Length: 181
Image (cartoon, rainbow, N blue to C red):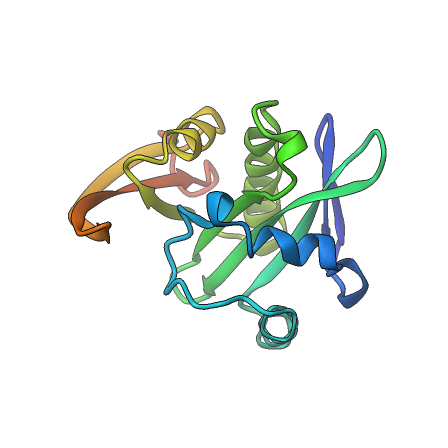
């Protein structure tokens, strides 16, 4: 299995235990960065992250890639492919630019495009999907600029500060399976 995939300014490489530094863990403790993290809002510890990476690779259904800036080989974020449903050939794809020094440069778009390539070519995924808070305009733009489409909306899916917020559903279709993709 190929382990490094390149874009123009970034490359993705499967994360290892050595890659999970205190600096990387600080991303998951940054309230501004995590404000749009849609999971349970539970604390992400190094042990939990490493266990998730290990189990995902063992079960062949979750793969976490580091996003590295080519110019200096700095780890600046992550792309998580999974959980992969091998029966239906579908998967979530979540992207995080953790290092704020690399925000607003279009690197998330590039990382998503490389993630698409990995999913389609390496794993034969037919359809990728993701979802985000309606107020997370940066993510919506990043995905749609990476050839994803807005596929739907879940009305009032999230509860934020006592108010409901819609979840925007986005998807990307492997042209091998979808002629009009």
